[in-house]
Image 1 (cartoon, rainbow, N blue to C red):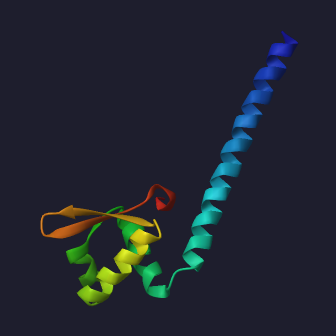
Image 2: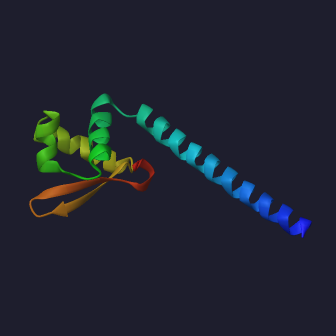
Length: 102
């Protein structure tokens, strides 16, 4: 009985430690990736992360950027695997990738 209790406690502790380390590694990777981005890229990414998803035709108005500049920034963020871009009628629907979801 004591052995079973120790095994259960050890497994629980191992699971908890794995979860904490995995979460810390994910947050560190996001911070490192954001440090490598320009200020404008970070603004776009923060807005998409805050909203959960954003329409490109509304985002350029909120961020006070030209459509061309926003489009270039979005393409860079897609290349960096920070956001996904999905066609939605006449605009794009932007969502953060799994690594950048809050």
